Amino acid sequence: MINKSLTAAALALVAVATATPSFAQGIEIGRDGVRLVDPNARRDDDMRRDDRRAAREIGERDAIRIARGEGVREVDDVRRTSRSFRVVGVDRSGDDIQVDIDRRSGDVLSVR
Image (cartoon, rainbow, N blue to C red; front, side, top):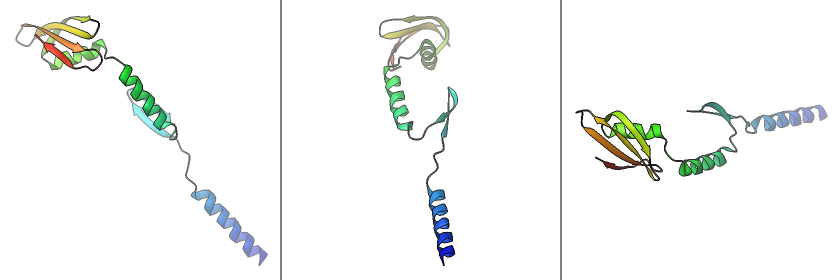
């Protein structure tokens, strides 16, 4: 009788121990490569990443990419002003074109 009780208790203990959630790490694949992510710290990292994006400005490459979307074929000059990037170049028809882009949001301010 005691033997059966010990066996049942051992089985119950094994069942409870294997039913607990695993504490595995997740994988995040992004432009920075592959990295391991702690599932508990994920929320904090996402909030910090959002804060960094809000404080971050677009770069010169991003400004050129946005200007190409507005019709710039060849880029002659990129000037950084206090609040914007000014991309000067040539459009597809060979005319001069100038695109002003907000440094924080990436919005197109003007196309001349």
